[in-house]
Length: 311
Ligand code: PEP
Ligand code: MG
Image 1: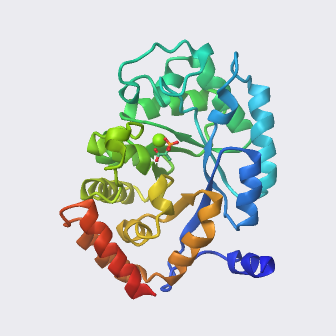
Image 2: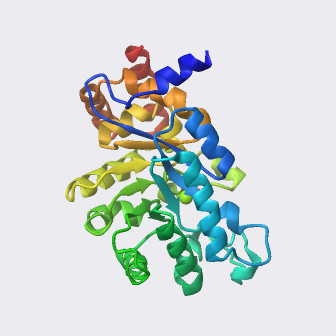
């Protein structure tokens, strides 16, 4: 059975009508990398680097970061590794960063804002990523200037050739995707945060979190706008948020123009199976229709019908 799983994981992932979809894994450790390779991942679309930075008294220096990224890259072999710059904030505290307590951490100093406020922190991350040949992904971008500053620091550190992309997880980034794509090598949509910010519902607040669904037509329209903006500059768009691992969402994402999915290693097989059964032309019509549904529940119902017809 193991050999069978490995065989079906082999070979590039394509839709029925031949469109190439890259299937990557989200990683937070070396053990995740091993699980991802065993499940046939084509690379890592999101390395959550927080595992190195939390629960300690001092930040990891460049050498320690290099060692950790080298170990993960070694497991991945030739496969690409997209490293996300540190994404801590008031809700994920790192005492040595001296971040202020905030009433509203989701709207405070988090993501790229933390790195830009601490030049040494940004430089050690960039230097370690460049030295280990990782692609670099910038979290929580809301303005083009934030990306420009990261690119400028990478260039100053000898990383002019580094592939630097943006996580689209604020509505501002989705709505200015064309501007970001003119500077970035790739875009990757973080649907977890994009959904909480689009719906103004805190992911971590149980009183509203149950109502959060990334298939809300507002989120789908932001994804459509992201794909349209990226297409103007021929930049690829991936999804690394939870929607990429949702079998009902995948036909809609691909239909809107997403060409890369990054999911937890345990979801690779299920998502690969959906992609391989999908006809992209049909998915485009389906996706367009979903933008005009009145609610996430209506999208889910229609997506369940679509999935039923695929079988
Ligand atoms: C996201 O926001 O969708 C994402 C992938 O990042 P995280 O869940 O780590 O915030
Ligand atoms: Mg996020």
